[in-house]
Length: 125
Image 1 (cartoon, helix red, strand yellow):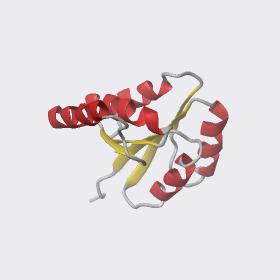
Image 2 (image 1 turned 90 degrees about the vertical axis):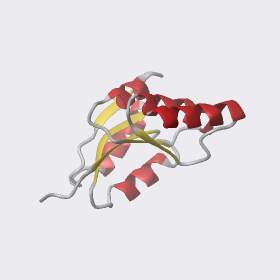
Image 3 (image 1 turned 45 degrees about the horizontal axis):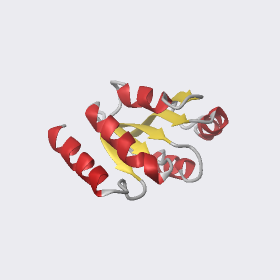
Image 4 (image 1 turned 135 degrees about the horizontal axis):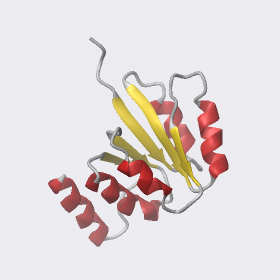
């Protein structure tokens, strides 16, 4: 019996995103299914690092709302957010609203309102 897989999408391929991606790619049972960044060259560079690794992610880039398309994929279990900190709460909430677990590499909220948004969304999904 094949072990269960955690299917992951990563938003943010700038400063720290590729480092998180490279850690995830080495974990048994993790499948990197999607990568996203506003800048296409960052996504392409990250995808190149995954060549011959068994991970063949779909790439999302080029517009401000590509990350939403990643979150809307039915074949993801987890969305890892590695964007600028002020985007973490809205991206995590959107991912959870679409049935995904969400992970933030930094504190996910910058205000009490965002904290409550995260708590309330996690409680109903």
